[in-house]
Image (cartoon, rainbow, N blue to C red; front, side):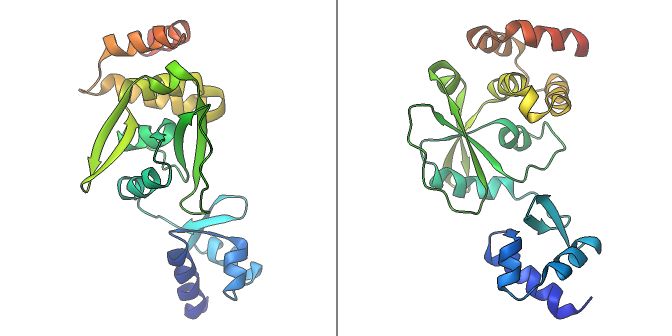
Length: 202
């Protein structure tokens, strides 16, 4: 592989905040043939159809969460992004999950960082909001218990295996609060479903 092509590909990724589309590479003079070649030799990896990042990329989640929170100021980091922040999953999400109230206006988002908006109703949106500080910036994120409840609710879309992994790791964590978890589940009307998985894992 020509070293200049590898360098050019890394430059494209850097210019696009770590993620690049096929057309971004093509604009830089990197043909589809070389995109596939870069993937096959382990320089880049495909995260979804037409979107790539550097292979073996370290999760920059905490730092990028500040940028995401500024792009969606009324949003709350949720689901897999929150699960990853709390180190309750080994999965490295390629996009950021951010919840906003269902009556809220969808913010105008850039291509990068990739953000998926989740619309939630009153109780589901307002329950369990926490605020953390990252490099001096305030970031709103759901607490561990609300994150687990959301994973249970969206298990079919997110993946049951990921939900089970998150719940299992949560139960093994010294930060768990089962009383709060069950209280949230009751409030969010998922207690029966949660109880089923708890009985298997406890």
